[in-house]
Amino acid sequence: MIVLDHVTKVYHPNHVALQDVSLAIGAGEFVSIIGQSGAGKTTLAKLLIADERPTQGKVSVGGWDVGALSVHDVPLLRRQIGVIFQDYKLLPKKSVFENVAFALEVIGASRARIRDIVPQVLRVVGLEEKAGRFPTQLSGGEQQRVVIARALVHQPKILLADEPTGNLDTLNTRDIIDALLKVNQFGTTIILVTHNREVVNAVHRRVITLKNGQIHSDQHQGKYALAM
Amino acid sequence: MKPEAHFINTCWRIIVHSWQHTIRNAWIAAATVAMLVLVLSSVNVLLAVQAFTNQAIQHLEDHIDVIATFTPNASDTLIQQARSYVLSLPQVQDVTFISADQVLQTFRQSHASDTAVQAGLHDVDGNPLGAELVIKAKHTEDYAFILQALQNPQYASLFDTSTYDDHHEAIAAVQNLADQIRLIGSALIALFTLFGMLLTFNTLRVAVYTHREEIGIMRLVGASSAFVRTPFILEGIWLASFAILLSSILFACGVWWINPLLRPLFEGSDPGVTTFFLQNILTIILVETAGLYALVTTVSTLAVGTYLR
Ligand SMILES: Nc1ncnc2c1ncn2[C@@H]1O[C@H](COP(=O)(O)OP(=O)(O)O)[C@@H](O)[C@H]1O
Ligand SMILES: [Mg+2]
Image (spheres, each protein chain N blue to C red):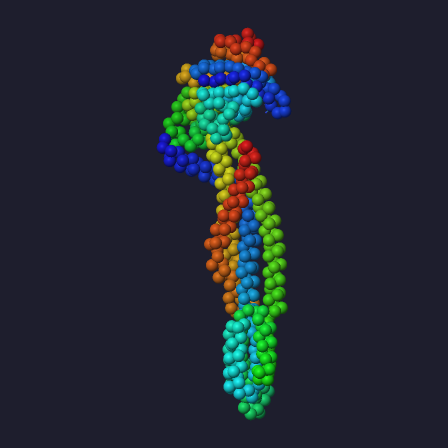
């Protein structure tokens, strides 16, 4: 499903963020990518959605050669991948429902489809009761679950989450992990980027560790303590 | 979902988005519209001035003529010969013959209140005034030749005087004024257009900046570049449309206000500004719309493009 083949990413002018990274992730997997700040985790995530292009090597997602994707095709790729990035929060002036609907509106979905799907994904993250609220009326964990709902609205085969539990406390973090595990149970491949020990230990699935832009370890049923 | 439905949904949302952009940006949008109105109005004023000076020159040229006055004792046969001769000149457009009696009558009427003149006329036997030929040339530059032709020895003795009022200086003055106005006007239009474009550019940069979060999310969830870009370009089009509407209304008001004020300059005949407006307004609006849309679209694309990559 996702294959990185000897991928190197050098930022201008000569900062090597990823070096000769090769990995393969199969459909339906739940993979955590961990590593210290600056290890190249976000860079890896950006390569998967063609937000950055590899300097060398090949990135392929669901058969697409992502590194060689034309500008026109990038949006089509992104409709296949649900993305959660810390930089893209909720729009404060839109309600929960509108925030999730927005992701469908901008790709031209019909009203009927929006009315149909938005409540479904809100139910998946357990927020169907709070559809009318605004982001400021939600806890941090709830807000983040709305972001997950928004990422799920295209019914993507892959969900890519970069530090989705970033500033959350233990309880809220637990909610997010549960939501992701639930989504994974429906068959969606999950790629979870994190540096949070509790998260990795709670998930107890495959863990890829990055260190200085290289793969340091790749363990099935990994634990944070072992990984580092 | 049917593809048409998809297309209509998308178009509708793009239009709604562009409206929201314009409304949220209301103040800076208003400033931009004002500048664009200034651009269009300066173009319109220049066009009106052009129409007015053309009309003025036309008016002056219509009033150029040579009046050749015969000596009172010139015989009718000779007068008719002289008239045929003048008519035969290729430069001559039109000759009006005014008989001595008519000349006298006109003279009497125009001096009806002047008792001294009336008394003088009474004292004189018969008609002291000669017949006249009012000669109009085909082209203004032909008058000199016609005056020359009247010196022809065969007829010269028949003529008492030949007066020629060529309005030459007036025409030159109007022409000169028109040229000056066109020059200054064009410079102003260029300057205003530059400001207008800069303001439009700035407005769209602000619009993009205001919507940066939405733009980011749109791109993240796979909105097409056209979907992200088009509302901003449409925002430019809205601004241009407002400007065209406002400037056209201003133009109409201006024309209807100024036309009667110019009437005295034309000795009561129509200054032609209103007529010019009615005949050309559709073309003017069409050309201005096309021009402004092209400019605004280019500027908007540049403003948004550099931001969105
Ligand atoms: N756009 C960029 N330009 C230059 N250097 C960058 C850019 N983005 C990230 N980097 C650098 O690349 C390295 C990896 O960054 P990143 O992938 O964000 O790491 P992580 O997400 O693991 O913290 C860091 O040293 C960072 O400073
Ligand atoms: Mg990061």
